[in-house]
Length: 158
Image 1 (cartoon, rainbow, N blue to C red):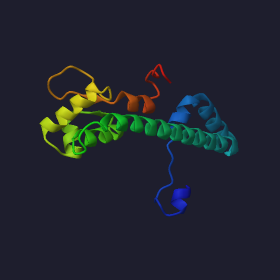
Image 2: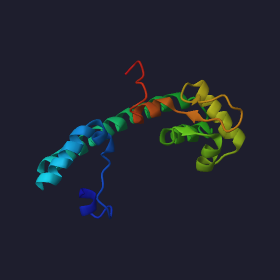
Image 3: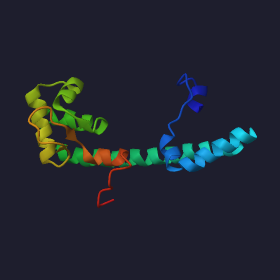
């Protein structure tokens, strides 16, 4: 709503589905009570609480993502500065599940150069191959997926 008021966006919106999902019964009860009583105070307080929890979770995700980025940078520093590895690693931060074709469309390069870079990142432990198919292999950046997918098991170190 603040961004809307400052003219940054035309719509006021916030994503609070994750927080609502965690307390779905409380949300439904507050909404029922608000509809019956026409008093939206409790429901509004709940929504503000959900916004706060969502914001805190997203700030935590950003901090964890910055840590992953720093770790990856320390790994890819050993590659030539013009290597496709230096384009593919940042791409994997923003698109943690991709095929070689996806990466080529986003960052350019030949199939061979992107495929070689992906293999280097697999060898470095940054990427894994989801399946062992020979064509259209799906590469995953598990460290990034762990941050954003709350249903994935947490890594042993944190």
